Image (cartoon, rainbow, N blue to C red; front, side, top):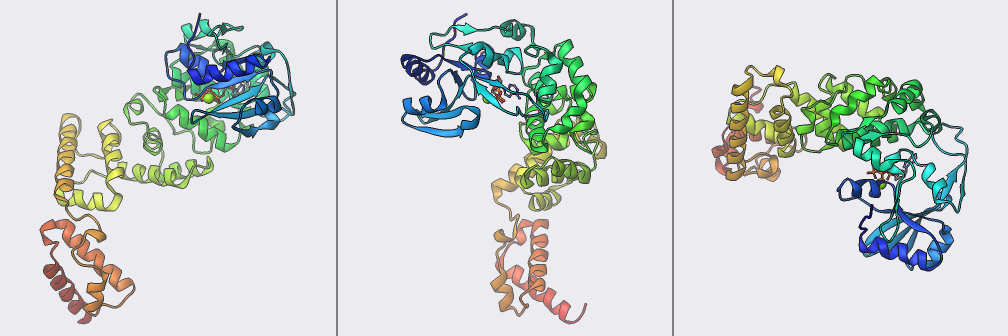
Length: 412
Ligand code: ATP
Ligand code: MG
């Protein structure tokens, strides 16, 4: 089999070869190219030492010299060039205690996790496949390189990677590798929460998030996080846009919003994702707004982006239990809400304080004191306008505010 590599990758390989070294594109990029997918990035493996790589290329970054990795910058992109290496003993079940460089490509390929990730391609496009990676790609099979138990015992993250690749590629995990995961699933506790979240996110954003079931079947699920059981992406999740918070909210339909927030906190998620996921989980438990005024209020409260995500969730069949209608009637309601939203946005109806025809200074001029009273008054005016956008007129709002102020003064 011959493969075609991008010109910049070939240039890097050629330069290393001309200097008397071996060099290959390796790992995920080879796997993805064989599958006909555009690789995200191209990694290169070579017998050249990091210092030799740095000497050969004018622009490099020391990405991980201790692991043998130098990033070569070329044509506006970065290419990780890593020296062939053998991993030493793994005593923490996650990282090798040490690594050593080797002149052997075979040794370097042997340390890789799965056969489909352990292939290399030369500058001339010749494929090096020592462990049957091509055949496993054809069969749709995730299989460890070498003894599965040993490989998962070395690095527990590989168990989660196996499930993640199964979801990304719609592959099955080979029986012996799967049995090894089931046996060693408890070792997942050796993996940092950040790495668990990173893998889980890739799984969730894949074409087959329903493959998360493998986490339950293998016994990995209880090791993921306290509230993890309750996280169940299914065939509906796959129909959703590939947005993290959106898919987390979907997959966690069985969890309370506070439990989902706790799950994401435990996994050390960024705040924005956690807050959006929680908001969507809360919104899913509420009935949809009914009528245009209610819709404006909801848009004002949660913002258009979150509202659109909520619509996607509802359209995919999430949160249907909270609605009085179901099936076709629900679909019609959702279509109607989308149409109403279009109208609201097209007309430019006031949806926030900054769209109000009057502002804080006008209220101060009316004698409303600075502080909470002013904020209260503005929000009341906003509610009044959300009810009917035609009310967003300066004179009308000033009169409304004055009347409200007089009532307050009279203690009504
Ligand atoms: P993607 O980048 O799409 O997530 P990938 O296969 O490129 O997939 P990376 O994490 O970028 O995955 O790793 C690059 C290569 O390094 C892999 O293809 C594999 O050969 C090797 N590798 C990565 N992580 C491990 C690991 N934990 N154990 C063994 N080999 C690994
Ligand atoms: Mg990669």
